[in-house]
Image 1 (cartoon, rainbow, N blue to C red):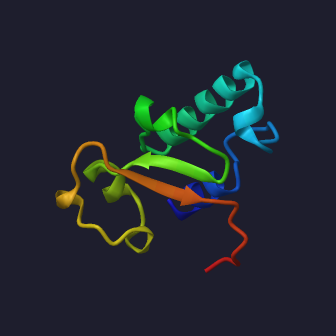
Image 2: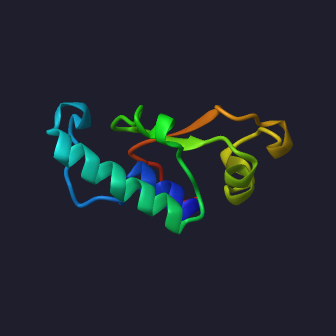
Length: 101
């Protein structure tokens, strides 16, 4: 799962250049969001439509659900999965330029 998180931070879910995602044409943004959703789904993670609408380059959203928290490495978050409520969001900040742990 650490590789998945690192891949998200490095924008591995798209072949498109994400530079200034917010200013890209609508069709390109939709394509990138679709690929991001597929990438998350393949890893067993989710991002709600509401959180997906708030996507921005280098600030990648995930739903802070118990299921998502259970799938992430324990060092990725400190929250207890049972304490999460609907509407919470986690962020993966990228790109990852840290050496392998």
